[in-house]
Every structure is written in structure tokens, then in C-alpha cells.
Image (cartoon, rainbow, N blue to C red; front, side):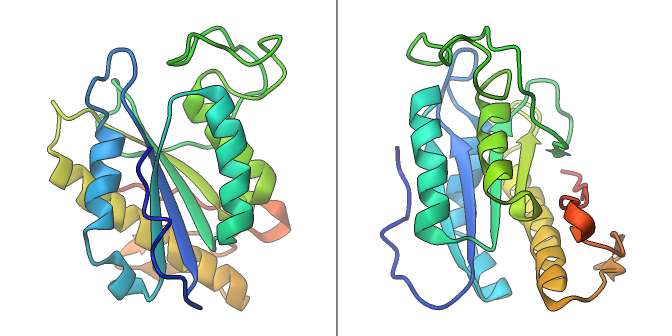
Length: 205
């Protein structure tokens, strides 16, 4: 699907953000709307980064091929996958991905081979796990509410806030320093130390 991978490459650190296209029950995917708006914002200028966005197909085989490939191409400082949740009332930063339970088919009517060979219960978990395998200290998955709860603009603003916070955590990690408080939000003193993943950051829409 659509992406801005053709953007001019430079020496700036990369933040890679993905959303998902439509699937059953979500003919307009809030994650797609938010990520597309995010690409039009000023996050690059604010953080001094190169923002690369991509809308993923809701297909296991596509994601299994694409996500590892993007890690190799982009070498991102931070990767954030965004999906929609019909039960979310705010942004939800997921904490894990599963390794069994594939029974829900994708847009092609498929599940991974043998249904338990790959982690996850649907494409969100599946995608997140693929990035965790690449670098769990630089990977995150955020579920956003549906567009009947908040506008795309409101969701995008909250998403941008969460991305800024997580990016600063990664910068602190790379610099070997501690994060205590950023814009009034308390974070962890140890970011991704001893193999621990990014600390949860909540942003209300």
C-alpha cells in the first residue's frame, strides 16, 4: 500500500511508523487515517528526524516479508506500529505479542501455516512481534480508538505526543542517560536497560 519510502535519504535518525489498511469491520481504518495525517505534520522538524510512514496490507504474508525488510532498509532509531481497536477509549501501548492462537483470517482469507508457527492472534500482534524480534528496545505498538469516538486529527495529535515521548526515551537510552520527566509526564529512570522494552507512555485523546 502507500508509503513515503521514496523520500530523500539523509543522515538524520529514522522514525518508522506504520498503520493498517481496511479490513472486516473497519472499512475506514483509524490507524491509516492517523498515520497519513502524521506524515503531513511537523514531527520531522520538531525532532530533527526523518519520518517514514507506510500503510500495511492486512495480510500475514505481506507483513512477514515487509517488516523485516524495512528494518534492514531503514535501520530505524524507533519503529512504531499503529492499529485500530474497537474497544479502545484512548491510545493503548501494547506490552507483548503472542506466540499461539491464529484462527482469525486476514484479508486474503489466510492464517499463517499450521496456525501456530508465528506469534500473534491477528495482524497487530503479528506485526509487533516481528519488530520485537528485530530490536525490542526500539519497537512499539499503539492501538488507537475508532473514528466514531475521536476525529482523525485528535488521534493524530495524541499519537504524535506519544511518539515524541518514546523517541526521547530512545535518545536517552542511546546517550546512556536517564529519563525522569518529559513535558510533565513521568517516565522510567532506566530505559531499555537489561533488555527491557520501551516504557509505556499514555496519551489521552
